[in-house]
Length: 323
Length: 254
Image (cartoon, rainbow over all chains, first blue to last red; front, top):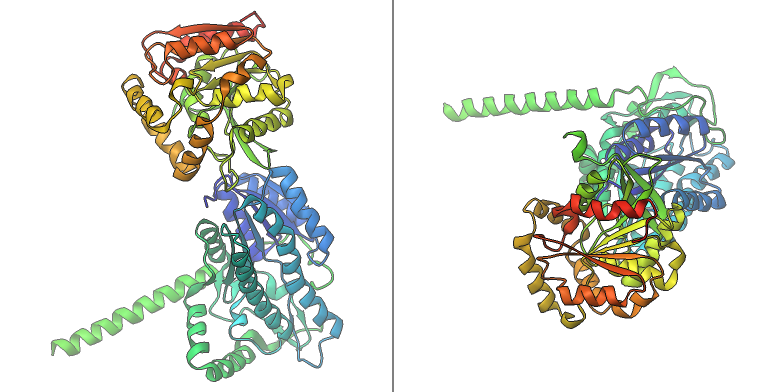
């Protein structure tokens, strides 16, 4: 489907991947409908989208409220006449030992990250099916493939989202709704404000676990999925690696991810007070795409390093060969 | 691109179950002319006409669902579906009563409006109305369209190719089938507004006999022939067509 002139609804559009996706769609000429809790942040994103060349409509929405999500779809259709793509992206998380996270916060994460997507799918699919054409994109995560310690609720939710997509694909196929596609996007660690917004009961400050990629990279993948829908897409080589590892050495992948998170996802030296983060109240401010983890620079550095490594390896091999 | 090779603005309206795109050109306060495109075409081939009328009219060229920049339903719309979409858009944009200029199969869409929403019709210009009652088969129509190509300006080619790519072969074929079976002659007497039938004198798709019949069946019709051009008068002789449209803007009798 062409992205130009299409109508794209994005939940979680106030920051991170959602915001980057809205901007990418707008600059490709789509009309975007922006949903998140923060009205002021959405107004800012709407301005940026309009400056990028698309029309935009901001609809402050809490995705845990099924009626509000239905109203979001209705507003989108009233304003722009149709829905071509719906991107479920709103998600929250917590870092906490299993026995220490308050149960209601655990529930809240499942509520936002699973039920929020369910509400989105239930709101979008009637319109997509009526039109006979459309794409539902669920942003999951690599942790759906290789889960992490301390983020049980989030990992569970992301696995659930992946399964929801697959289940919906099957159902749509059985119903003969050929033109309606459901896609899952599985990004690795992305440079977004996510890690500053997180609830945390570990006593250690959370950081973006390397390798970090930019949110724009995920946004590009999502735009590509609107153009040419695919079942499941891993973003970046690290995610594809993890998928392979989980298939060929699942036990090893699990153990490695566990110690990786302990070493790299939480600072050893920087303490953090217990907080419920943005679970119940949105983070203050007008939001941003990046979380200051230098996703783009990190990717560039990795590329330079791996090119250098390849070249060196090549030269060494060539010398050996030549001798 | 110079200022005269582009439309002034583009407008999107939530109507007819989709996001209807329309291209606009001309002064805001001038009377409105709505252009209805033919099969597989879009707003694009009305640009020369819009340019010719740029001082006298605000030309608005919508894309019907599935054509040009308007997304359509996955199944092609029949003639009634298209005319209802047009009616819905005219209502949503409050453009009912504007001068309607339709080309080719767009005439079938415009005339079908008279059946269910006559109140939306303004003065009507039918440029090359289709489909000739005596040649309602695919081979005949394809033959006539091919015979028309020498009479079109070559610059129309790229414009049409782009529009055909946008609508796709399946929608084109399905819509073509609906258009072939549309009995326009039975609807013509119901058109309650003054109507000018315009025919390119070289147009093999609309022979003079058929144009005369169309004019005869209208309650207030008049035939104009534009010498030396084929089916797509709005592209090949926009100035001549503008001269026919202009008096209608002032509300003069057709």
